[in-house]
Length: 445
Image (tube, rainbow, N blue to C red; front, side, top):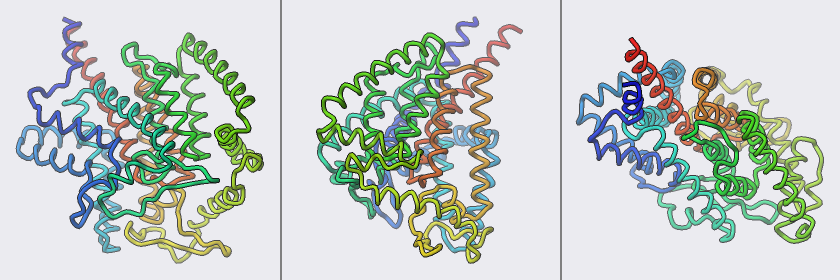
């Protein structure tokens, strides 16, 4: 009976809902793969994600039992308090600043997250959701190589259907790939999440860096090709953390493989160090060193050190936005107004810091509310990993910490939806494990 209860608990609980299942799968795949600038512009941008949300909500309203079940799950979910506070802040910001998007965008993000949690837990199943996400990672990893060799975004060329300001990006003469995102930095954030997924062995429930060697290689090559120094540095830290939380056997295997890869990289650079690709690899490696050590070795390999130094210096001024006396600290400016300021002669327009950006949009209340959500999410993942020792919670925890850590140097760039997919998978997995434990206890009783 115990084996039977475990089997039943592993299956999605709402069956015979083929339409809803198809919509949920569509939501997961398009959330990762389709760019934000692809959709229908009807006063607002009806993207693939929003279309899926709309159809799923309509389906729920036509099936009151599912709607009631969904509402009950939302009310009792662990993130409801920080999300409710954040939503409240967005409402009064909307009213005070007459900015409907200040509320609308936050509401859609939270709605999408809870739809994902519900769909993955009760319709799709968390294991299938992981497999779908990994399939998207393979697709985008291969696409990233094609994009680099084409020298332009194929998505932007053929799928730009709504008004946008996205453009191909270059640095030091090299094209920077951006995948389905609107910027290379945004794609780097997505790759950090994919790296964690690539290391999940859900059958053995263990962590192994080279579980999917082809995929992990693709993802790290893509990280190089984004040209993002902070993302490359954090991706290497993520690799170290993943190795450290692996079992003793997998740690040993990972270290041996990494050693031989480093030897191979050294041999490659000795042979091809003077070629274009060799200099590009060295430029990326040394640019990370320059960022953390304050050196300028990347200039030897063709990097535009003036641009890099200006970018680094520019970011140092961003935290001083908290000191601007003309910016209301309790009521943000909303999301529709363009922000600019001059600090010590430096003109600040691009806010490359997510937390400063939250302060500008929603003031201290909004920034603190979102930081509260991050803390609650991390604590939840730590407790879940401690209780069940599952690779899912361990790797989503590492991905989440790396993602939000990187946002100190970047804005979210419309990538929060990717992080929410991973959190939804972790939440659905936790709910399933809790239910399975409950079923097992009832059998024992």
